[in-house]
Length: 295
Image 1 (cartoon, rainbow, N blue to C red):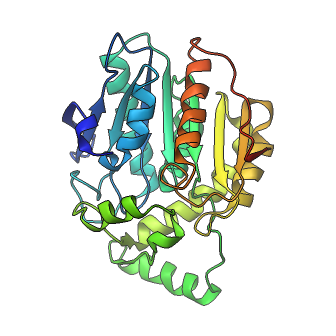
Image 2 (image 1 turned 180 degrees about the horizontal axis):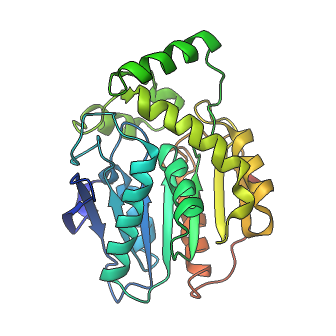
């Protein structure tokens, strides 16, 4: 997939003046039956979700994809932001999407760091959305960093909150897809930086959101690969358990972190697309794929 799926781009302006880049994809034929707003993960950008947008527009959805501040074509130091600012930005995106397509069922979709942002947005702001989709959300890491590194990092964060360091992410831990790896190697909008403030705001907000997941008031879908080495599968399962009947948890057996770019991407995206259609009054409820466990 490539950037040609995006028919329009525009800028949103946050309350603090930050200019935020948004890409928009529209169904090939007919009116939009639903609207999906995507918030992406650390070091990437909204335009990288062309494969997701194509799957959703093929099922009648209009798709908006935000570049977080400090990412992509949005303003800000690369890798520096805070979850609180990004949740405010997500609300701004939802308002813009709702204004463009009034009365359409509206969904918020977040992957990894974006999953943290989307969940926080739903809990803190309670926007008028019809569904929440969390893909491999970064609520906790899949590993425990040494305590002394965290202590030093928090100290640095108090003194130099905007100082960035390498995320250390290896594409081999994200997906198994040679073509996507090639595209990423040429993608000048991607970066590998994270500031102390951003890292610890993600960690702290993730803990808070897991603890408060029982307050979710919208239908929620959480998907997480059982072989994710980046973000915590257990944290996603715990969140779903706390959220109760409003939340559907799909454990994708053998899946890596970026399920939408991994070996079963087509089936993953078909499942998400049908979940959106079902909650837009356009399709039947989704059956669990054979390769998954249902939480």
